[in-house]
Structures are given as C-alpha cells and as structure tokens.
Image (tube, rainbow, N blue to C red):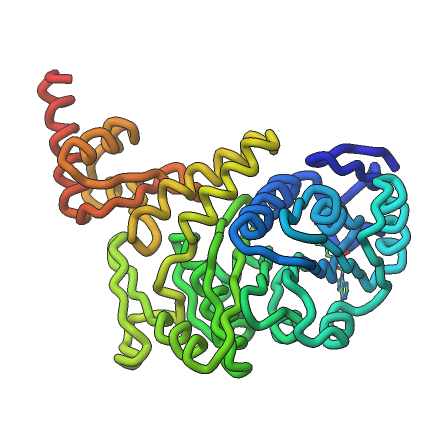
Length: 378
Ligand SMILES: C[S@@+](CC[C@H](N)C(=O)[O-])C[C@H]1O[C@@H](n2cnc3c(N)ncnc32)[C@H](O)[C@@H]1O
C-alpha cells in the first residue's frame, strides 16, 4: 500500500495493480481526471441549487476514492454534505474504511452490500447517485433512478463498455441497451447511453436531462438531472430519435416519425451539456487547480457545447473521402471563422470539429487551402 493525494483527499491505495477485476481492490489513477471532473460538476450544481442536506451515494466504491473526495471536497453553501458508500467486495470496504480514517471525515457511512440492494433500500433518498462500475452501468440504472430524489436529483454514470456503445459489438448493444449503435463518432455512444437511461426512467414518470457529458480515454460519462412527472418524462422521450450517418453527415429522424431502414438508435438528440453548469464546472476546476487535463477537457466542452451539432466532422475522414490532403486544423478553423461560421474543436477527437457551417463549406475550405499550397501561394 502507498498513500497518494487526489484533489485534497489522501488515499491509501494498492501498490501493484492490473486495473482489472482480478485486483483485490480496484483503484485506477487514470480515473483521477474522471473524479476531478465529477467533483467539479457536482460542486457547480450545488452552487446553482440551494440544498439544506445533500446526500450522495457511491454504491460501487472500490478504494472509496470517489465518495471520499465528494465528502471532503464538496462545499454545500447552504447546508451539509453526507456520503453513503458501498461495495460488495469486503477488501474494498476495509480499505475505504481505512481511507475514511486517514481523512478524518465524519460525514461518511460505509456499507458492505450489493449495490442494487443498497439502492433499493433507499427509495427516493439520494440527491446524487454515482454509478462507476466495471463495464456497463446498465445493471444498476433502474435501482439508481428509484433511489434518487425525483426533482433535481442527479444520476451520474460511467460506462467503460465503450466498444459496445461505439458499435464494435452490435448484438451486445441491442441486448444491453435495446438500441442499434453507430460506429465512428464517439459522441453517439453517450447519446445512446442517455437515450437508454431516459427510457428506463420514463416508466417511473421521471424525465432525465443531461447537464454534463464527456467521453475520455476508455469510458463515457454523463450527469443527468431527474425531473418529476409524466409530462417531463414525455418531454424527455420526445427528444429521442434515430440517426443515419452518411459521409460524416448525421441525418436525424424523430422517434415519432417511425423507424426507417438505414437509421440507427435510439439516441438522445437534444443538448448533452448545460452551458451554465459547464462554465461553473470549469470555474471550480480552475479555482481548485485540479489536473490540467481535466481543465482542458471541461474548457473544450464549454466551447463545443455552444454549437448545436450532433457529433462532429472528422476532418481526416472528410479528406479521405474527397481525396485531399489534410490541412492544419488551426488553419481550417481560422478560415471557417473568417467566413462567419462558429467552430470549435471537440474534446474526444483531435481531428474533429463542430461548426454551424455545412460539410460543403468545410470541403470548400480544404480544397482552397490545398490549391494555394499547390500554387505556392502559402
Ligand atoms: C470500477 S470499480 C469502482 C471504482 C471507484 N468508484 C473509483 O472511483 O475508484 C467497481 C467496483 O464495483 C464493485 N462491485 C462490483 N459488483 C458490485 C455489486 N453488485 N455491488 C456492489 N459493488 C460491486 C467492485 O468490487 C469494484 O470495487
């Protein structure tokens, strides 16, 4: 064991790890970024909404890193923060208890229990439920929704089964998420996951609205606000639909229009980030000097979420289709901006941009740049 610091929380963690289920206790240092972003999003939410008591459940806690960071680093401006953490693995629970002592916290309860049992025993109790499983969060989504408060609760989840959500295993995606995936644009993986969660929540007359979503390294992560009532559930369902990807262009079809051959889904078609929450998240991460990479991801999201586009245009793929050389991304972005278009890079693909321009505008800029290069004008 060794002691490390994440944020301002001290953690005793195993020295030798395989980062798989084989580890006696799971701790992944790469997920510090995930935890930095999570603390910042929830703090941003707390700064927007007044709460006397704010109760968070981390039912798949591993070493306790996530739950303990919430307990130590979240500040509730108008009340208290309490964290319930649990794990089915007795070794994880033992370590989480040791980590609780190291941090001298008195606002945490640690429970040795199956996550679905813990969540089911706490009907409509938690302000936040954070699902951070191995693989898909799917086995826990139903009980997580029932254990969340129904108005302005937060369900956050990590999915590490991105190969499934991104379309490498179509049958598994249909089986696990009742949806047909699309390969290529990773944002669609989050949209598929959100779409699925909305369908699960709607049977309880709960609507879900995403406030922050990212796809980083090997996982997708989203934060969804609960909204009470059949009308809100209906509104959330109305935002689901089908997508057809044709040469980097995404054609969308609302669910009400029915399924058509060539389309895939269901996907969530509305905004997957709330700009106020994202900007608040960035401020928290910057004020607290959280990891540089987490700040960079949040900053890019704050830019990309101001452009209303599903997914992104991958410039390398466009160039390969039109058989043109790839221009420098910055040159292309500057050119499009000079033409009056909004443009942003995306956090999940170094070759991707979002823009309110059309694909023909991008193609024109690429061709013009290459002509100038060929004629030695640049
Ligand atoms: C990916 S790890 C959690 C990592 C942790 N949240 C963090 O940020 O470091 C998943 C954890 O879920 C636990 N787990 C697996 N199945 C479970 C179940 N049915 N109920 C409760 N815990 C479970 C595992 O023991 C493991 O510690």
